[in-house]
Image 1 (tube, one colour):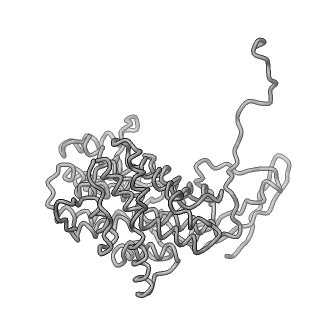
Image 2 (tube, one colour):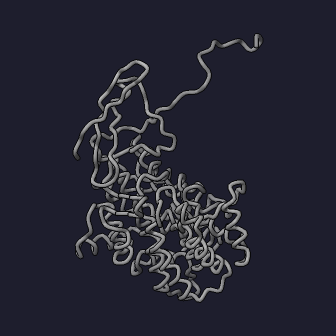
Length: 430
């Protein structure tokens, strides 16, 4: 990476410092401010880290202005159309697409790790039946470190690899069981003869009393959902995984921390918010009224599933999942008024000058919630589905962070605005 410098001057005392500029493969250059405090006594102030690169990474690149998303250099459009989720998992973890033999070996490895320890199965009984599935996910994924502590040496490459395989393989089992536990129905075991998405759907919806065949259109749509959610650079949950991992916490504990961050409605709950919004609109004839409310600055109502923190263009994932959504609705012949509202709302928003000017295009969350509702997945499970897809991104980012030569424990600084130094006064004198 080529380097040059920029001069920063403190006008209060006239001191200047040369700050190196680092240019990556893609994206804007960054100022390397690591020596800024040492040389000037100043920190940078950046709430939300909107203008701060917290790390170097080779995994994902996003250009929000152009609507570009690359996994290890491969456009998301190509991966969603031609690849599979397990192949994407291999790509994100190992850095390159697998050969045929490598993929067969990897797929077999994942298939034979899908079972969980029977003691972990009993762990579910400690939760209330009405516990939110994400609460169960945080607890059970974190508990993997208590059941699989033979591969927790974070400094050993093979141990890290085994933990990654276990996480990818077991998280759909844990997710499906979280759903089954809430319904009070039997826990099905994984089926190694099924594909990744097929196996998950089988564990979600099959019953021992009857045969269950996975619809290939639904399985493909679920696989695409997993691919589109697999990685997305340094978002809140990924940053949380890296921060937790920087303390040398084991991978399962670090990913559990990421699940907790994803649970927040501002991050992983957007597709659930879309369904709530559609229910609020209630009828297609009410759409224009709610569109007007969204345009009113003084009205707190917002159209959920439109716009994105990063993308200032059409979310490339939304274009892909929209097609999957249409295929699923056609296949299932779903007659749900919410889908009619969603399609009409999308049509209006894509033509309305207000939304075009503000670049409020439908995002991936707008369609993923609709697909999952059509399949029969309850809204409480939407973020859990997100978790299954994102687990590979988290563990890949964790691996990259752990193996960095400059890796240090995360320790953000602050701008203190509290009370000045003051002396303690005994309680009877206050």
